[in-house]
Image (cartoon, rainbow, N blue to C red):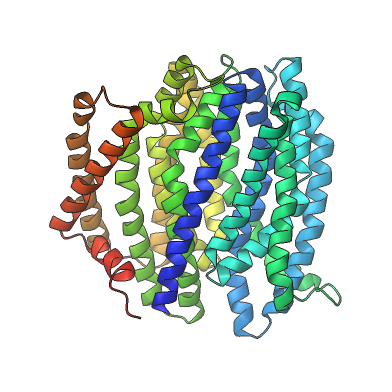
Length: 503
């Protein structure tokens, strides 16, 4: 079992890396064709609302479906439960699709009143195209959650890669003729291809029961758990929408700088943060199902320390290399050196956001395993209000650069409030272990940063890519030696899991 889980973890990390790289390629394509123009601003702004529902369905479905499906399997009702959720999701997704497309011409100008007529027209049509995908997204979400419940994490990642790559190919083929619409239409096609890919894998196994009458009680019970979980996931998009609305009041390109910087600085969270959270989640759910509270707490403690062990040096290294990274990735085509400088400034201020939200991902998995998603939803609602207030304060102070600063401060509040509530809910965790591990990791990351920062001055004349590779390798070696010398238990746990695991 340990060997299989280790292999699943490695495959998932690889698939997560491919997913984030494909997402990065999509941003590079947008930057190349549209730079920081109003067309790019309109496309990115229009995507936020439908993407809120997309994340509501995908990530929310995984967090709710995995524990409910595992519980149903224990009662030999797995295929029935999955079939009911799948059919119920089709109906709900269809309703969201129709309403979203119908109201797009109304909410776009309401949310972005500063867009001129051409930008407004682009945003409305792009939003309608993305809402048309929700029907297929809902079905994809149930099947991806099923793969996660079986510890086949990489399959759900591959299906998401299909969607993104289809969007990229759409731009390559049609960007010159139909502009940003090519990306949206490519995304639409990708959701269909992704659904077909999953159905080919699932239907022959007969693990989903689609025949018979709808059991509305089964569906209601599931969605009673799913809705607060999904809404919690959507909070991130709501906060992003708040930031985008504020950015739309500033100069052309502000929306683009915010989105590119956020996507890049959050890349370690998407690769390692979500990976650790997703792998830990089924273990936590099984611990709760077997009433093993000691294993549940130990799994959470390992989740926190592993997240910090991997995320902190990754983010610190990115901050050192941020100007180099943005220049390498985006500065070509319609994306100018001035746009690179503006995006870099924004990215620095997102540091707290990615670190704190990554840690909170572990806390959320604990809430969802206990089926207490409504508690985190209450905290999330408060974070939205705080985000609005902070955006008012910080944007009046430093313009659109106040948006990422607001996100970082808000994330600190969010993770602190969530942890305090969860700590009381589970009657405590091993705080001595957590604090000592966090201290060791923090010291190692600080020393690593101090060591590699001056290195850039000595290799300033080298090719950009060589500079990035040199700093990354030196930083990784220094950090690895330091956490080893400091005897980090989380590092030892990682070594035991992936290197010394028993066959």
